[in-house]
Length: 136
Image (tube, rainbow, N blue to C red; front, side, top):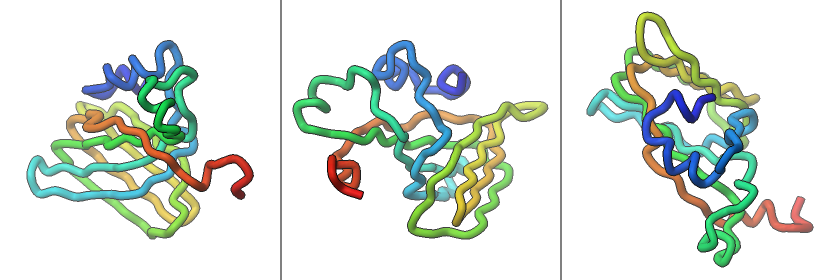
């Protein structure tokens, strides 16, 4: 369960309750590299909403959950390609002797990061007009 492997996932687990949010088809919006740490931040949308979203999300009609995953103590980064439709799985694996290997693989881009720590930096929601009923 990936939400038990990364730090700062308590809020996400509370929102999704007993269901593990899938990383099988995320939309990767941004990869940010910081010299501090060094750190890489992946900003991406989850493919699904929680079964019972927070009431303020429901009232505002928000239909997309977005995460910022901060990867700290970066040892290696590889980015191949970039496009407008960066959809694919994110895999978070434990690495030996410590840390994580995080990989995103889409049709237009691939990102791989070896790091010491992984934490959810932010959980938010927004209205994605492309997901509105009747929009293709």
